[in-house]
Image (cartoon, rainbow, N blue to C red; front, top):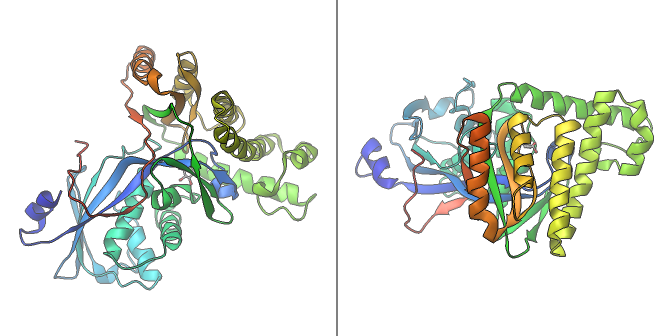
Length: 388
Ligand code: GLA
């Protein structure tokens, strides 16, 4: 990567390299913007940025994957406007850094990513967090503030009203652990997963076009549910505050669609906590069952699944050594995540790929989900794989 950087920006440049991982969420979907619980794992798929100061006040950003170079005046970052391109992620982050009082000077950036775009494995957050580290260039910054700043970049500049999960796990991920995040307190605890199991993500290779607007609709529907429930329970500020019992009492007062959306959130929050408990007891059957319940709830109540995801979940559940499977991430395409016995992984990969090819005439990409460290500078020399 350093060689590639020097070729593009000059042989005497001394870039530093920063890394931020993508994630797979094991359970707790669409609960983050309802201030509930999520249980993601940081992946070894990551976005890397090589960065060095430029001497002419320009911010140059080169994407190796897209083979595109873009140039901006560092002095104009406070007022730059989004263009609905990939550069909105690093620019949004730069703008939020400026707003936070961090001087962003001219720099050359070269981006290489192994997180597949549009796969639901959080390539956006990986790009945001790695951009923030590259632009901070080693300056101290509180890690929680960093995650929040990157979320603001996505909400304010990119225009996606996302929760905190993806940026948070990209910063706070840990090798060998899942991370249970409380999206209200913004604290977390590490969750050790049982031995002898693997999580595998299978990519549908589709991203349906309406996913952005559907996400916004869900955010609005959840807010409508809170408004309806608040009338009965004034202490309720988000769906996080609603117990399953309370919900049963008020559900009939809500419009049908809104009630189903809220039911997903209320039951999903409870499932995250039950999943963590099951994991602590090595109850693999229990963990798998909760994953399937989560998927059915996303499929029927929250309605963010699609034919490809449903097919992969159903096909996985019919295979040897599988405990559970569900869609992961925002939905409408992207990946499923499947819990299975480690030794069943090779035959699972072969069988699921064959089944999906037969049904959709597309070869799904398959990733093993090894819990990895969160974002930071890459200090030891290693070869960074290129997706291309
Ligand atoms: C996207 C968002 C996250 C979260 C998930 C769904 O990945 O960026 O904040 O809401 O969808 O769980």
